[in-house]
Length: 102
Image 1 (cartoon, rainbow, N blue to C red):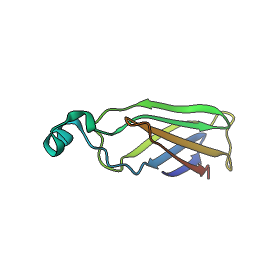
Image 2 (cartoon, rainbow, N blue to C red):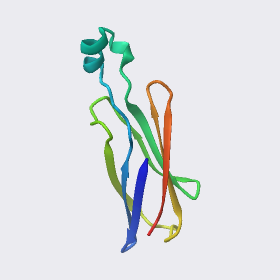
Image 3 (tube, one colour):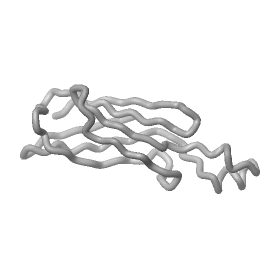
Image 4 (cartoon, rainbow, N blue to C red):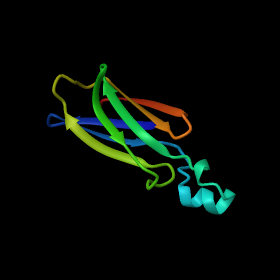
């Protein structure tokens, strides 16, 4: 997972990309005849210094290798702190990435 975070005027803006195929129920039904083989990211979390700053549940309707953009107030966070991002998919696989706040 690629993560970029920039601090400007008291706000941290984040851009993160998760590498994932994101196969939907319909795609798997056409491909294998079994919808249960669908696999997509369903949960995404971001933390700075152990504090959760982003927590999101998703669905099958994201693109392959989805890009997430969000922002949050820099209350207590500063340049150089590390933003840790992680995701979990339907099959239990996880992905992680980190980036320093610039």
